[in-house]
Image (tube, rainbow, N blue to C red; front, top):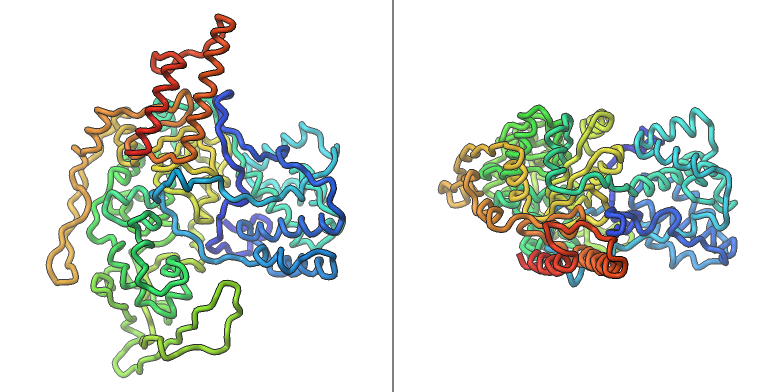
Amino acid sequence: MSGPLDPSHPQEHGHLSGKLSPDVVHSQDSNNTVTANTRNAYKPLTDASSVDLLFLQIRAFLEAIEDVDVEPETVQELIQLLTGKESNIEDQTSEAIEVLSDDEHDDGNEDYDPEKDSDPQELDISALFTRKHDDTWSKAEIKSMMHDLKEKGSEYFVRHYVVLLGVPIPKLLLAFGINLCSELRHLSGPTMRYFLRVAMFRELRIRERLTQYSTITDAVNLIRKSKRILILTGAGISVSCGIPDFRSRNGLYASLGEYDLDDPQQMFDINYFRENPSVFYSFASQIYPSNFVPSPCHQFIKLVESHDKLLRNYTQNIDTLEVSVGVQRVIQCHGSFATASCLLCRRRVPGKEIEVEILGRRVPLCKVCNAPGTPPKKTKKSKKKAKGEWDSDEEDESDGPTYPPGIMKPDIIFFGEKLSDEFDNSLEQDRNIVDLLIVIGTSLKVAPVADILSHLPHSVPQILINKTPIRHINPDIVLLGNADDIVINLCEQLGWELPPPDPAPPTINLTGRLQPPRGNPNTKKRVSEEIIESDPPRQVGDSHVWLFPGAEGGKWLSDLEKEVERRARETEGATSANGAMSIPPTRGSSPTSRSASLTREVKKARII
């Protein structure tokens, strides 16, 4: 998704740290999820000098670079403004102006440690907010403008208010509660448009729950009546197939300690791959999709399509298991092993042509660029440098392996590579007609795919199916647990039968012997089904959160438990005092027993 204010700006893998996202807490008083840090929750600065205010506002905009596209000229213009100002600029802005390029691979199954689970680090943007009451826009006007943004999108918002109506951006920012200091109100056009992108990005991350949906029955009815369902999937739907995830205790990154890497994510960095492709190919066989059996989640997506309900499946996975079960309306956002290309001549071939090398942990070479008689070329290996250190002109060639020209690379989108135009074009079409969003098996930490939820109209119902909660989004129904168990439950209630998968063909392993397919081929009778029969999903109080086997809620769930218990006590006290005011008990229990039951449920969920 390229920035709406600069369509020509290429969208590469961004860094979605969540610093601009609101901290989501649950308010059981309204049976809704609200944001703790809405526009009115920030305390504006009242005692800062003009110089300090300028510095703080510039720092806030610079730190937003991690989330929002920005032109280099804009960064330079903001830094130049600080020249000569009486602030300790060098120390305080060093981290803000460093644009990180190493994202995290998305994975909906990282280990969730309740002891380590803390509130996500937030960007302090209080300096951007107005310090006094401003009546430029009425409450009704602001409400209408924010509705336009969240329902019609940022491109419409800019086109309507900036281009058509000609509203100056500093004035428009006041509708977001942002009052620029005088030095920032007359900067260049690109810089002013960047300011507006920051404001829109933050506002789009604040979504109000649709409170009419909260139960599994609601989820089933939404799936049954919807005609254009958008399904967003991540690594969590493939873990049960035997494909390793990335960040869990036994995941792929944890197994890369033998390599001398600054960060395990270098494995998927295009620049590192060009320097040393052998590292990637040393583990690529572990994630190569030749002998994996699709999971019930993949079959569920196919069932949605078979019932003519699938608008599109946006998958962040590279295993092509959606295609293997016959899903046609799928966008492989991060590419796949289906094809491979030569880094030198760009020749593209079917992925099967390099399968032997991948399974043999060898670097595949282009057959055209490596014709007989072509001399080998020694690649240079740059010295490792500390974070923030300047590149050195000196390079160490003694440690670098020798590679012939024309290294073949699977057409996976590495960090530093642009997503395909198909992603942008499809999403632009889909946002106007989607009627239900289902997120399965992803923690939504890698942009721009993670921004899909903000890009869609906020009135579109959202269902989350994941092992762990996602703190920076606000879905209407949250189903926590093993994704396979959850979709099996939904299919049973929908009356849909999950078909048994076609057996995957065996492949040849490193020893030259046939290797059986991985994953459990018997989906018609799984252990997880037996678990569901004996241990049905449990609602957390009267909230929109449901716990299935395998749910890991951590501090998020603990906080929700405390809030539900607090509400139960208040309700019980009010009932005793007034003899009337009462909330209908959940599952036929009293508020007291419901609270005690919830405590047992949450504790059980933590140890599953």
